[in-house]
Image (tube, rainbow, N blue to C red):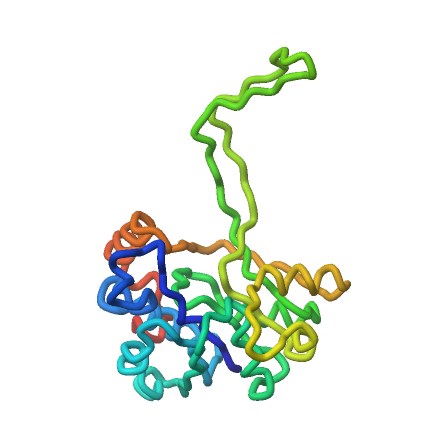
Length: 241
């Protein structure tokens, strides 16, 4: 199984930390977040990883090398310009198998990636999106009114549940090929919407797991706290043992 890991972003929301340090190398406990992800990919049966790099790529390449230390084969795809979260596929599709993983390089989760791949194949999906059920709480009381601005309802700081993309996908190579042009910018939401509108099987996969987007300083701090309180929670069992 192959995986493409998007590790080329500037991590603008994490400035000033990410100005001198690539976000995938930000430490969580004793390991950078990208190393934790790579170990989870290996446990899911991934043997080959392509890191799509740009911003401060020399630091990422120096840290991970050829991947031998982690029991993986790691190669690098360098973006001369930002290509988005799906654009780098244009240079890589001919080197990929029938199904492959694509994930953000800052993914912190306990998701069973192997189970997600199995679900993708069992359901004969063209694309499977890792989805997480997130509860959002309004900071304000919400009013409902009619056409005459008479109040018809009052909801004090209601909560809503939504499915959000975790930033991990299983893709069928031949299903995405028609949408990819080498060297052109493309983001995953645009790719998924194009496939869905064309009638292709774009499915979502959920599990009872933990997931956190570490894009903002406060979320990164929360991730550090979570990992420090239970350092083994995000590592595959074989690594812990």
